Image (cartoon, rainbow, N blue to C red; front, side, top):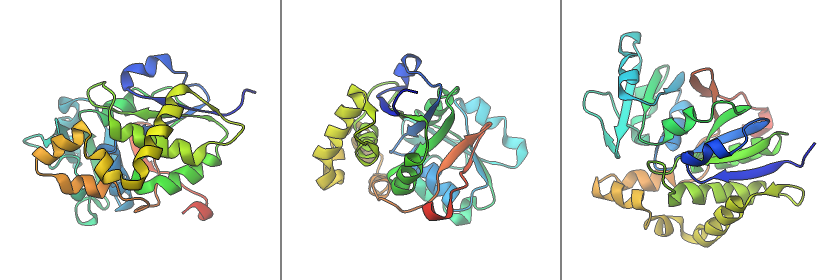
Length: 243
């Protein structure tokens, strides 16, 4: 058996060139989809259903689910909310199923079909996620949602943070993993300032949602790992020591 590897996919457009067999795909959309997914499930959401298109999201309207839609950083008119973590409080989501479509994150999740498992990563759950991944025998592919199939800074820096925590002498890293780790090591002393130059960070500031940026950069606020089961993201059952 080949040594366990950590690879980084810098854009969903590159996913067709990555092998998914015997691989755990970790989907990363720091600003803000995967951060909100982690926060929502930690706050008692029963499940989050990621979908790609607005029409598909609306098709769940008669099911009694909460419908959430974001495009270009803004809530889509006619939906309950978007992908701000502040919309995923206990008061709003506990016991509910949320159907979510976003510009980048939900599309990346759908494109990871074929992986052994698809889980969700954010700074909010980074330690729980890292500790669980260390116990898994499969290869790891860190999938950056990016921005409309382009590279983005915040997802790559987070991928680098995971690489830094997970790598061992026996693991194989691809070039993108080394590059992501280098970016993280440059950024880690002051993540808010470093990621303040990211294009999506500036986009969010222009939309007056800079508080979401600060929230999404907090480490270890939750101890849940969302995992895709069928069409739904649910809480992964963790060993007691990882909770």
